[in-house]
Image (cartoon, rainbow, N blue to C red):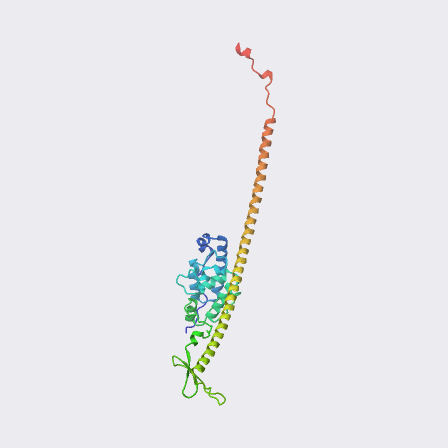
Length: 320
């Protein structure tokens, strides 16, 4: 185990600013993408204060690629989420499902929601730490090697559920009568034997094949009953998952509607501003036109200059 003694990463060494992503911002919904960049960079600055230099180095490498900037309005539609859940449409570029920077950008960009809560639960089990959908998760471990393995998503994600044996697993069990009057339930592989003593004074020892077959039928009926219960439970679980999926989609539609409503309000405000400016320009044009008309009228009303008779040259004198 290697101690993680390194101090938090220096801000200047891994500095990123809004201008570094101008190309990615302008290739889609610029207003929404710009907001994403602001949120992620703010979270990155907070992470620098507490996370190790090696972790910050990896996050920095991922962020500067710009692949996380996307037009998706909800977490479940973002490529990072799709990659973490193993869905198509992700942009993993060879990274593993639990690669920490995926989660980092999702939590920085999107508000709490069911899809984000599901990812938080996955990360809680993976890291063995409590991950809250409402609080940023900036992990740091004493063991630096294990920390980086977790950051890179290299540690296998262990299943926490224990599956019940199915009918197929139990069907390897057979019942055989024995010479001493007992009935054995024997595994075909010979690894486990369960012997049930049914030789009692009040009951005869079943020796016929029909008794053995009847016991087998009873056990098979029990297995089928358990299997029916399992199918019913799976049906309830499937229905619950279906309902939850509908709730998630409804939440996504509400969030998307809110984003569109916000954009509509902003566009309406801009339209009103442009209308006001156009009105001012129209009034200015009217004032200029009035001034021009008034100037022309004044020119037309001005009296002509008359020359007195005595100043006029005498034609007769000129002829002489």
